[in-house]
Length: 426
Image (cartoon, helix red, strand yellow):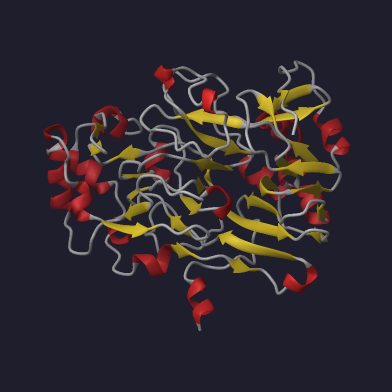
């Protein structure tokens, strides 16, 4: 693949023309995001010279966001950090601008009328070691700062996880029997070194080709596999662990999305957690995800599998009381020489993880290496119009053509519920 520079932003753009020219599909440029408190795992296919392209003070680039209209919650960030760009006819404009201009066509009238935006996004996050034990706030908690809560899910694509890096395990929740007083004591010990929060939790070994369902207010310390992460369109979080791999976590990073009057209120900070969900005695059964085929199609040269699924509850419901379809994702594998037309119930953001092929008229290729600021041919946004009419995927190469696509709310009425993987073993 020949790397080309992403065009400069155009002050004049015609979203409708881009939609029509792309047969309902918009080509997207890579969207890179650094995190100052983490070390890059270097499996994003970014050139080795470019992991600190934004400066060492910003931290290494350890995330690539897909079809994002959500701004990154980083200090000292660029104005458009976290926003995906559409590239068409030598011009570029943000996907956010495109949705504002052609919302019903791009995301569907029902979603547009309810949210007036594309309310989800996905990413690859890729770290050398683990992330501190943290949670994402629910709707009510985030609303105190005019923000939104953030449930999320994980999938570990095999194509980018040939190595596991330092700690391919994730701590989830708290051990049954842990009390609120135990967690409060950890917060009291914040400046005494490691506050011991992980002593109250359990780690699960991560396996490529599987995933996890993580509602808001559930503690989790993601491990070092490269992770595909569909989630709600927000970047709120609270770090409850004071040190990770010997590195100090600043208290300000813990309370960055907490109202000022509660930033030192330990009881409030403990009560933010979904207690029932965190001490669940059957946590794995309720949150572990195994890919589930959407049909018996291997004989036709392709397989479309649910890799992210499950329902979520509202702000006052526990982790297991959900009935809302907020987001989901599928992995489509098309074998060499095969072609298939797929109809979905809603728009999707898509990334190619292996091989070459075509999606309608668009040539697609999973790159081996990407320079920061260069254009690729591995990512698109499939509009609601195109998805519901049917999109044709064709493998033009000699290895499997594999793509991941994630959907927004109420776009996957036939997706499985968490726990459905257990029926595969019967």
